[in-house]
Each structure stands twice: as C-alpha cells, then as structure tokens.
Amino acid sequence: MNRIEFLRELSERIGSMPQKEQEEVLSFYSEMISERMEDGMTEEQAVEALGSVDEIAQSAMMDMPLATIIKEKVRPKHKLRVWEILLIVIGSPLWLSLALAVLAVLLAVYIVLWTLVLVLWVVVLALGVCAVAGLPASVMAFVHSSAPMGLALLGASMILAALCIFFSVLSVIASKGASRLSVLIIKAIKKCFI
Image (cartoon, rainbow, N blue to C red):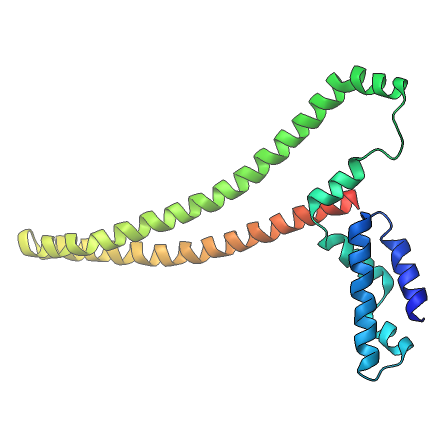
C-alpha cells in the first residue's frame, strides 16, 4: 500500500473525528512516512512499518479528548424538525429522570470505590500514629510503672507498626487498582461514543 492509499483509508476510518483532528492525524502520519523514506525505506516499507490502519485509527480515536468526542457525537447531523423537538420535550420527564438516575448510581459507585481507598489510607495513618505514640508510652511505663506494662506497650506498638506496613501495602495495591479501573471506565465511555 502506498502513502495515498494509506492516508485515504485512514481518513475513512477517522471520518467521525472533527475536521481539525483529522487533519492533524493525517499530517502526522504523512510526515512519519516521509521521515522513514528519508531514512532509506521505500514508500511501501514505510507505510507497512506504521502498522495496520485499523489500529492507528483506533489509537487516534482513543487519544482524542472525551469532551471533543461527546461534543462531536451530540451535535445533530441535520436540523431538528418540529415534531422531533416536541418528542424530545414531551419525553424529557421520562428519559431525563432515567438518565440522571443511572448517572447518579454510577457516580455513587465510583465515589464509594475511592472512599474505600481513602479509608484504607486513613487506617494506615492511624496505625502509624498509634505505633509511634506507643514507643514513648512504653518508655514512660518502664520508668514510672512496671516493666511488664512497658513490655506490653512496646509489643503493642510493634504489632501496630507491622499492621501499618501491611495495610500500607494493601492501600497501594487498592490505589493502583482504583486508578486502573478509572482508566478502564474512561476508555469504555470513549468506546461508547466512538
């Protein structure tokens, strides 16, 4: 496949993108082909080295900001007729309330997810503070009370420190998982609009 065929096929695949973004993608890949040809490749080799048109188009669509995708998809393709506007207005109590309810539930689930991560980090902080506070308390118990009380406080402080380390590892894993899930959610939303 030569440059013109490649760019034509890519243009067809990204046709739903706004014109400005289409031009940027096409000029970027045209320049990449030119650079590879300057490095000694033939036109066909340079096009082949880029990869498949489908993968490039999918990547370009996924790299586009979500707001731009939504704005482009929501914009009507034709001017709305009077009866279409009336149907939208008359049906709005039903479809708008359902859409808001679904959005509220999804947002609540997302907030709960990140709240659980935050709670884990608060537990880590509390355990760390208690472990650190237990050390001077054990010294005070050794000095003013009895040795067994001081040893008990020192043991409790060490246990709290171990729990702090365990929960900090768990919190890091939960934070990474929630971040990955957030990225997957955004990509799924983009795919719905693409």
